[in-house]
Length: 365
Ligand code: SF4
Ligand code: SF4
Image (cartoon, rainbow, N blue to C red; front, side, top):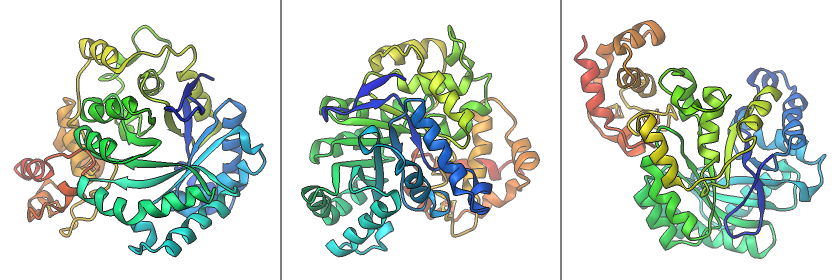
């Protein structure tokens, strides 16, 4: 395993971390939590020391499963994180509410302290400022009380907004979605966080599955390697000098092996060099939907991620109408029911022009 510095914290983390949001659904439903926990133990055996958890992942079983595994390991052999925001506190922001939520995570993860506790899922600056004002003091107190070691932020904001966050607040680390599709969109935030000495963990390195689903388009990532397209996409992220750890969601032990192979003989490079190299070979695709589904609460019941997935196909040179009908089995005409309320665009982690795209789709009929 290749290890990297986590900002200026002095921690050394594995270049691949395990995101614990992809435990096997069937095993969870059948109560085979120990089988899921085996994947964590296997990842640790392979040198992974960074585990990212949160409430609600995997039918709210992620923390419990992860704790089952971690409790079998020496506490100083891994780093574990969890997350909180106003939503997880049912919009209550008292010290007691915060502490209860944190204690629940500690109990489920079977640890006395978290290495990283995140102000979770900040979508825009306004929301961030509100939650920061209400909750940061509680993070600070929990740190003084020894229940958390580092206060971090996880965000889907664009790079220039992330720059402002880095400037105005004091976090040890950041978790962001970053990959070979959206790197231009977030680069300013990465540069600012790195300059400030923050650790940077990356989620969604495969672009919500888009990269593996379009191997031909992304074959340029594998040039000069013996890696598969998904492995090369992971390596793309991990090779950034500025990025401490790339999270891989592992359902099976094979996924761990795949991810570990992606960073064999890793060569770190500054982001600017990587961009230049990739843009000479490939394409910049910041305008693709990653399928994150944050927008999926349309008052008109439009299944936005599916429509945006079809639109992706058009951008990637495939048949949009065919994707809607053949793959998703949904009519283009439903897109015309959009009332332009704008809610989805406010929530979109890629800041896509969803309403314009739906209008274009509606015109197919
Ligand atoms: S803008 Fe249209 S698609 Fe988006 S949430 Fe509103 S009605 Fe739904
Ligand atoms: S449209 Fe935006 S919020 Fe919705 S799934 Fe795609 S990237 Fe995510």
